[in-house]
Length: 426
Image (cartoon, rainbow, N blue to C red):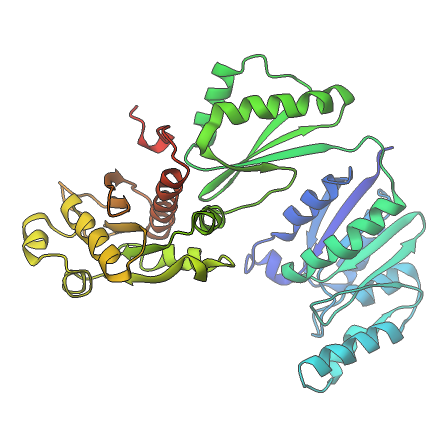
């Protein structure tokens, strides 16, 4: 059974490019997990006539129409009004939505005002979809043979509603027996073209029943294996294992829907080994520390890091000798190793990552061009240092340096003997 789903996104900010549409990705990911595919996606401005017209048109060509955005308290939030007109019903104060708003206001110790109450005036006959985190509830209503679902545009609210309310209800309403089977591998250190060439070379008999897709999400690359036929589902585990063996330590995680960052992977490794890490950052300006401390449980493995942007602070905070800085410069093997040794000594940690580089766009020389960076990693017994040239825009450069530093210490913790792709020549 093919259930067609249309998506209608509304918002001037989407049309003007003020915000990036990430909700469509969320819809596609969640719907495909239960065997539903998006047939058409339309984005419109906050215009009552256009919105009403699109609701009428899109509801004729799909079993499900999801409208995202326009449920808020402001004058340009028009979804409820447009939907009521398209369905030929009135707006009325919805008791459930009103109670929800009161609870929402009480939690924040604030009073409801007239704009807030606008969110409780909904099309007559609609059903409420709970929103555990925001002020605007979702709603659903039937228009002829189409189920229309309206959701807030705030991504964090939408994520909860999809998981807890919408996806379970759609599964019940439209049970799909021949569901799409999806498996994901989160990888780091290998680009799409390199990975595809490797698969072509080493796994030339890849089965047609399993499709391979790539999603670059700097700095990680997700490899997505998808199949819908019975033969493909039987083969999926076998071929995922072959691909995992081929990619080796470039893989961070595998699973149905695993999404993990390098820091997410590193912190549990440190906790498991009861080891602590410290950082000595120059060109990344604290980005490595920020990513580590974003992971729950990081306090067990991270006590202190050092952001030593100037040579003076490298000397004062990390005891990097002035002669080393004078003779070799800040971006050098000698300096980054001295930074690493100083951070280990000052923090009494077990492991360290140290980085010093030229983020650009200025500051490069013939010998040390923009994008140059030295990364040191290891412990008091074994300290390694490696030079890279990563000629990217400043923020991308910082992200890649951060990711490589985290990956190098990760590989040390798992005793990886394999050479990462970014260290290979040619």
